[in-house]
Amino acid sequence: MILGKLFQLIFEANIKIIITTNTKLNDLYKDGLQREQFVPFISIIQKFSIQKELLINDDYRTINNEKFHNFFYPLNEKTSFKINQRFRELTKNKIKEKKIVSTKGRDFIIENFYSGVARFFYKDLCDKNLGAEDYINISSFCKDIFIEEIPKFNDENSNQQLRFIIMIDIFYEKKIKLTLSMEENLDNLSSSEKHSEVFKRTRSRLFEMTKSP
Image (cartoon, rainbow, N blue to C red; front, side, top):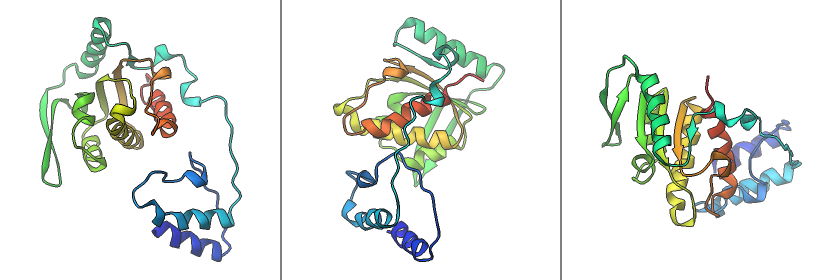
């Protein structure tokens, strides 16, 4: 609602702007709550803008060979060994703590925390009732995060996948480095139908966030 009013004033003042988005105008906030209240904003943008699709075949985040990225698959003993080895490298000579993250009266406990390095199972972050504020508060303590046992995504776990997408967006903005263990290669990490388009961005960001220094 605020955006609609803001852009109406911008266009009335004849200010030229360039906007980038991962979604076509007609699909903005698709399936969002009370989307009908958002539609007037889309109409304003369409009225005063020219929509251009930028086609890029190569994703710069995925150009480097995957061997230079800290993601491991599939889930087996070899994967566990590699991620344990990576964790020991980053936490060497650091002291283990229990970090309590409080968000609106609820506490989230980071059991494996070593001076900015935190280790989680996927289910601890995405199977629980956590939201953007929780992930923001978690990220405020961390520089490197390990997330283990990321599953294949499908229509049955689309709610958990949405939490995962929100979480990765926040960690990306906070410039957190990730180490992941997954059922699938990151190139082929599946998605629910509902989140398939936005998940392309998530997958791309994961490549960048797992890149070795």
